[in-house]
Image 1 (cartoon, rainbow, N blue to C red):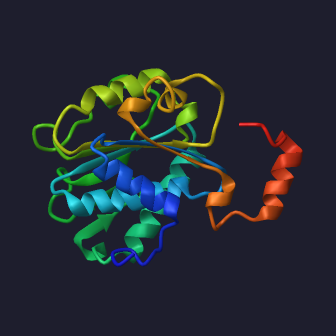
Image 2 (cartoon, rainbow, N blue to C red; image 1 turned 60 degrees about the vertical axis):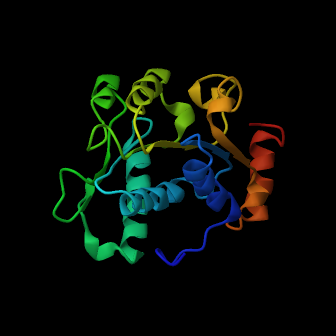
Length: 212
């Protein structure tokens, strides 16, 4: 809150704590619509670049301009209110530490080509790297395999988040067969202060209360 001017919900605070202090270095958040998953990506991006230097953050998600523009707008929103704002420079496709634009930065990376992802590493001996995956249920497993191969050094972290989906895919597995390696949080709508009860009733009518 002191760094950004924002007060986090408990779920958001717990996710950050789990990502950086659980010892697993990987956090997976399954949350309802409107809980602030993408906004939290913006917070974590700015936090990581301020904690580690030099450092790199790569953000990806399902193919689509909407996913990119929404997440990237939150990165900008948090940066614009940060006490560290003057230390960083903002571009439409990149946020970077002034004077170290090629060493310490955050960018959006397309998920179309896993080979592109395999080549993204931390700035010094692979260290100080953070991967963020938006709407993770819609991202191909091959992309996650490529990312995992890069997370082999000191201060390498991964935050993934999504609404719930089917009982398959990498995101689903982080809560089941892979759960011992992940800090996981399930966050129903009532754990957020931002979701209106009226909207929840509309969702119940649309999908049914037991729908993922």
